[in-house]
Image: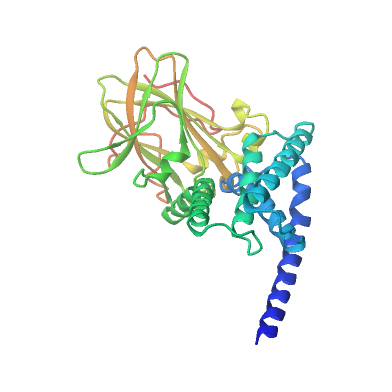
Length: 350
């Protein structure tokens, strides 16, 4: 019975060594190659960032499997020497990366050490540690791991929610979707009927903007892009909106290579609606790729006074007939600007 267990343990170790070796062969070259274009998928930057933990965990675990540790090496000596070696190695790697088309980072060095520390702490060949101290150190390292993996977990949950809610693009009813928006002074506000809205105070100096990314990008099969705005002030607010696809964002971001429009937001509730076909025809030298919409920006320019607006219910619909830039009897408000057939701006209606 004991020999069978020993044989099984040996085979399991050999298999783990093989898998770890293959993993290292595939991942170590990534440390010395130009940084990959991981930003096209929302989750890839977060997966990329935890790669250091996984790589150096695998390296330390494989090393522990293959080496026979001297009896005189204690736990703290092993932990200190291993982290010192990885610290020196990590600094060297970051130095090499700085000479290439990559950005060096002390956070990467920290993640290298974290991966090694976790491997040493949980490996069966680790020197004996007093029980209570071992449990404390294991819990401490697990907390650090959870902290490192939290951004990936949070964005994965929101990514799943965003795709399950489509064609609703944003309704601000979950805490994580706020992360898809950028801009100064943003906050979530609860209305009297219990709905959550995005509040933005647009400032007077230069451009004041909010930007929306990381929504489902394939808008094919829909005819209308809509969202709601509440203007609690007494004056009209002139907004500008631009919508771009992935190709635009990856090239020169030229003005006439995207959808640009002006909106007059009157006091009270407003519903904005934009035909998808107008977005498609907006670039002057090509068609916008409706299957790869990447960014929505809403901004003001040199307002006379700060203006507070509340946004909600960004969505796509299939109601082709009702989607127009003129007054819709069933909607909250009116939009006083118009587009010509090419998608270029016509003079603002007075």
